[in-house]
Image (cartoon, rainbow, N blue to C red):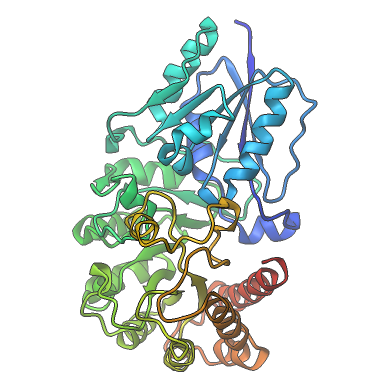
Length: 429
């Protein structure tokens, strides 16, 4: 059987990272790794991650596939156009092409919309017949039993995995809401354990929207991880409401190897997110710390009730918690989200240059801030939080936190990483 060659690309509009930095700090492109698993054996597949690898246009590939977010759309189109000018067939997929398929089609021979595990295989059959269709639409969400394990490569220190898909919280700025990805689907625990056992890396990143949506499912998974003695250290996304009230979950997570939880606090202002409703953020951080784990928080600025005073109030509040680290982002109304549609109706969208939709630029007119005040405010809170004295305080006063070597190294490395990341944002954007 004649072997055909496929190149799968994760484009990156923000330039290259050092390979050593990439190996230790970047999260692997899980969706592309899952695509490899779904590809028939008569294809040879190569993944190029443009965050730290260069695209070799002169190699002989039969089919080019790109999957991307909104911020990387224009870069993806550049790559696609270059390959098409060479006579190559190009397929585009991912969140942005799913939401704006007609835009994407201008730069592709075919566009896959929705979850693409099965449509990818249909496309390949048509490709072999020379009858590739312009659009392939996944009409249904992939069933949990069909969520594929990833085909991994040893380019990264950590490995990604999915135990579940979907998120029911419907945040108005999240593209999951626009994708109608609100039904929570859970893989069989035996399958998750099997995949975890197959992973060589000892560091795991659960790529689920939140590992705390179905608490009973998560507890069963954690108990199995403990029973199987997997000896993995891991990170996962979580909600404050669950972390703040379930001690049993925290005990199991700590025993199963959790290093830290990634938590979207989003704002300390009175913005009533369902996922955070009723949670006392400072007590949540304290409770998680007492169980030997950390919290890496993320915050968003630019909501309608944010004012110039919001930045200082947030800094004072957040600095009193014992977070491992924090990200400070500008509210970004991604296309087709309820937030984008609302702001577009109100004539508050300032640009549709997707390359600026990267959480670091102001792309809409804030209500109680100028665009300049919003950008400068995020810059200053980032600089204050990652000033050397502030970082040293977090690194050297891990009250109630785990003293094991990996946790200490994580605490140090994540602060150095995010200091570098926020400084890079200031110089680039």
